[in-house]
Length: 363
Image (tube, rainbow, N blue to C red; front, side, top):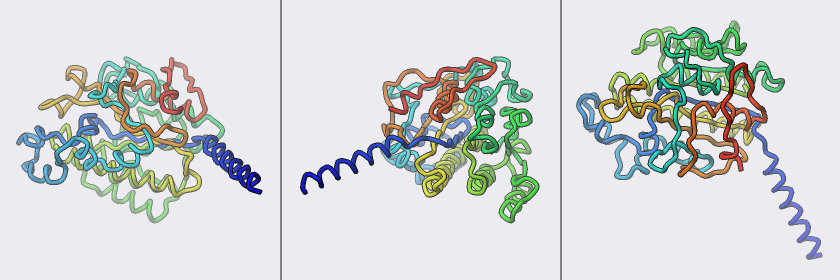
């Protein structure tokens, strides 16, 4: 009887192991927070910038009170608690150059349109050398996924910046891209969508008509996630870049802190919904880096360090390795194929697609 009981326990354990190994990633949530530096991600607030009267919005005391603690590990956790608890415990973070984990733009320009194009096409098109570039001629990953049987009609993108219509070439790609002040909900809006649309229309935007505040992008995307259950969803937050360009360090940090809170909200929903739970990849990254010290407000190929980026990723079957060190040199253009591979596809297009690095993430 004891032997039978032992065999039963071993058999159940084997079933549990098989079940754990057969969890597959069927969905993907991609989040970007525009131009947010790796320095704040890995070290927290920069005391030199926070102390500089040119950048602290006359509230150095408030910045220190909210975000300062003695060690970089404590500071980064104060700034981005979800990233440094849940994601660091369950996933992997790349791009801390102090630990020899280097991630870079491959494009030679180091600003937004080329960066987002590189993320999603897996390709550097040197003709894309301005943020005013017309609709992207290159096939993107979301467009590719939307052509796959399981993903058809279940792909969407939300962005604060109105350029995403062009970056993702909405007309050709065939999936909804709700960006800038675009209304959400289509032609049959419910009460929540009507309220979101009214607020988007009536909001005061410090960035002009080209970009709305992130709060409207977030709640429009979250509403879509809950009601439409997309299999591939992209959300782009923009305030980290906008406030940096304004030289507002307090607003820049607050924007990053809000993004962290919203990612937590998205992930908590994912992990309580049977459609997504233990079947979803989360990738968080940026389109470009920024300069150092007084040059932190800007970025381009004339400002050193603007090509230094980072990313964080977690999902089932992914090694929970936390902060990575001594990794191979990685490039932004490799993300598209890596995501495709994790979802079980090979991303092909009319242009070359950079090789992925799935083997680094899933072991």
